[in-house]
Image (cartoon, rainbow, N blue to C red; front, side, top):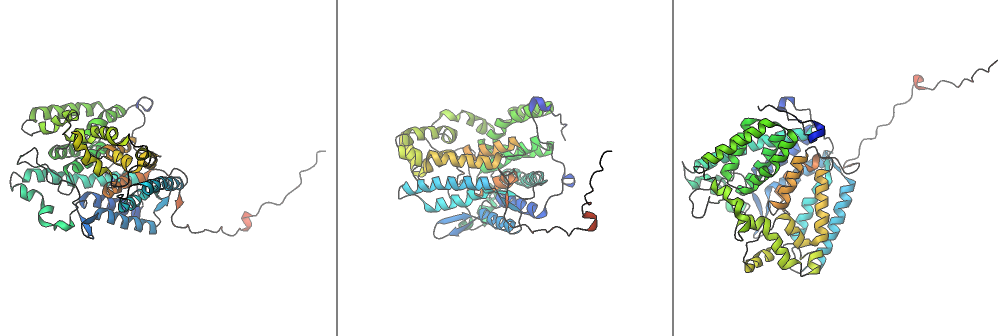
Length: 452
């Protein structure tokens, strides 16, 4: 365990206290703990699976199970409705309904319904929050340490049993029960390379694996600071060979070190960086570090993820006032991404640009403020909260990814305080006051004695 040196509050602000082992965690409501832990479990280990609907449509199994857990917690009275967030959500949905009404006929009504089902979950809060946030982070770290070890073993197994046995879920599970959509599970390290990136066995893509690991590293640095866990998380991040999770760590590590004031963490960071530089060639780490220069290459993933949205706005959105304010309808971003190839650059649809193109600036602003308020109001960990917002907006097309949103609400949104006094979902039992006794009767009034 690394030694911890905390900064003075007046200099670097408050940092959350480190998590303790499970034996020393505060007592929590068992039903709430079971519900939140179950949601995290299905979001990590079952995100590859889906249920077929109709011909080619699918719905993520993890999101279905999340709604079952959500309904169970509602029936048990463990969730509250935040009035302010509910009113905010209704206003946002009204703006989106207007966008849907004036959009092209190609607009997808099912996408709109799915969006409603996802974002309504942000209007709820846990009723018994004492100790739940610490318990949730502890559970998430335990679930992710198993996934990290599985990812490391998966990457090493391709040199022993071959790349075909590296992905057991794809080998043994029928294809119709795997969540396909546009995800690339099996990705080579480079073009025509025989070495495959690790997706942690259970994750939709290596990028998903790296992003979940990025959150784990941030949690570990701000909470427990267990050296052996950090080593495992970092090793798993390396074998994922994905820049998205790495960008989270690189972006938030200086903030964590500054607020923590921990010199030893900084020293360990330099040691790890030196080791990676020395061993980088043998570990093919150049495939990761070289991606830092992709932002100027129009055909690269880095350009598509972070730079191309600006080009999409310039080429397709600014010419249409109706499109700018009200969008082009759910699902319309796919046509613009394909049209970008005519302009000679590779485009991607991260959450913020997809929301802006499909629902317009007014709904874009409303939904962004709604989600940010649900996550940040009364938050117990500012660093983790901002990291989740960064992941949501920039690291993938997560506007309609039910699995990722289920993880966000279980990790952060349900634990923050309601924007105003929360309304219980179930009516509380009326407790009538006990009948008064003789001792409770007031003393009889006695007139004050007159002065002589």
